[in-house]
Image 1 (cartoon, rainbow, N blue to C red):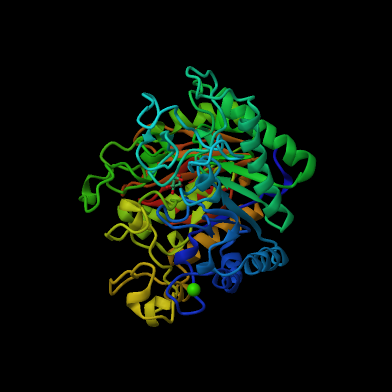
Image 2 (cartoon, helix red, strand yellow):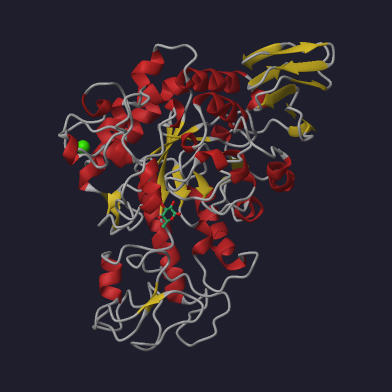
Amino acid sequence: MSNKWLKDAVFYEIYPQSFYDTNADGIGDFNGIIEKLDYIKSLGCNALWINPCYDSPFRDAGYDVCDYKKVAPRYGTNNDLYRLFDEAHKKGIHVLLDLVPGHTSEEHEWFRKSQSADQPNEFSNRYIWTDGWFAGCNRLPYIAGEAERPATYIINFFKCQPALNYGFLKPEEPWQLPMDHPDAIATREALKDVMRFWLDHGCDGFRVDMASSLVKYDDEKKSGTSAIWRNVREMLDAEYPDAVMVSEWSDPPLALRAGYDMDFYLNHNGGGYASLLRDYDRIIGRNADSDNSYFHRDAKDRDINRFLREYLPWYQDTKDIGYISMLTCNHDTPRPRFTLTPEELKLAYAFIFTMPGVPFLYYGDEIGMRYLNLPTKEGGYFRTGSRSPMQWDNTRNLGFSQGCADTLYLPVDPADDAPTVAAQEADPHSLLNTVRAILRLRHAEPDLQADGAFEPLCNRKGDPFVYRRGSMILAVNPSGDTLSVQVPVAGMKPVFTLGEARVEGSVLHMAGQSFIALK
Ligand code: GLC
Ligand code: CA
């Protein structure tokens, strides 16, 4: 079960190309992350997830890896990254790298060999090949006409991302290897070798990309893919007992039983998490008025049960085996500021950061960075708008880079009132300082950390949402109306409030847009 250091962990996700550029080439780098470690610590974050920083043609922002053991020169050298691990550790910050196990870039050496006319070779079965140059597969996406080898291959995501071959749960064709085929096992061992490489150099674990995608024709319970992760977990337990893994799976009951410490609560297609912060269709430029997110002050049909109906059964099923990770956003989703105001964000973050499990803050969300309407970059499409440079201050390029504006990885927010760290540092009520205050509260109160029990106390529509965490009671009223609710709070004292909220006997009075934590 869960590693000790996660009990009070709060993660900060860094999209490295957009965080801080120290050599004026317009692209963020490892030295930039090192320089900002004190800032990250000042937020109350004590762990990092860095998006893929390996060598890559960047047709999917680095999720198309061409060398798992070498960093992309645009971020620095391997030694810079090892130094980042070191410097972070000195400040009590753990670092997770992004592991992309399901596919590589089509420019990876394994794939070059696998696709060559010179067959068979060591890598022939490292990827999934059909048995004819125009023979396809009716259940999996494949590419024809690209390889020297007279066969087509299966992809995992974009065309540039051929799927690695971990075998099929129940092969149906001769070209589909069973999971226990030596070549399928070799892929798994190659994955472990990559993990050992980074763990040996000081990394603390991995965020795992498309974690449920490994075994093809897997069943609903993902038994094939889960068996692989359990095998990986055994290796970690034996060799790196402190290493942790968080999955991009969004099915905690399956992911945590497969050996993950944490699973992201993130549904890309609606669902409970989306109902909190992103209840709209993902269309760039869409009118934000139609947002019906729980934390939108004017949500038409506000109902926390849309979240609880999904979350609670997962939480109850998994609370003893691992953690659900709530997040403000990530590099694949529109920033919450797209539809929510800074005042609404304060309440949303207060809720996210006082939930069980291990929370994740996406860089820039702490100052309410906007979701920008940008043309696609490196396969980002609509996601590009959430990947713009961090806004540090009001100097050149908002402090992101000393380079020329037209060399930047992406343009900075052009708005006159683009939020910056510097401006918000000065204001005690800024979103930035509110995030700090909430995280200070979390670190001060073990009941609010990963393991503290969670139980809804009032989830009626139209009332504030009131929930218990261990011996504490918390409540949030995202609406614009003053609301009162009777709950067992008699004798309890507020330890933290946003807006105006108070206890009178066993009644909680909450002004519009308020939050309270009671002890
Ligand atoms: C994950 C990543 C995303 C990437 C995809 C393919 O969803 O988060 O950014 O494009 O996998 O690797
Ligand atoms: Ca740089």
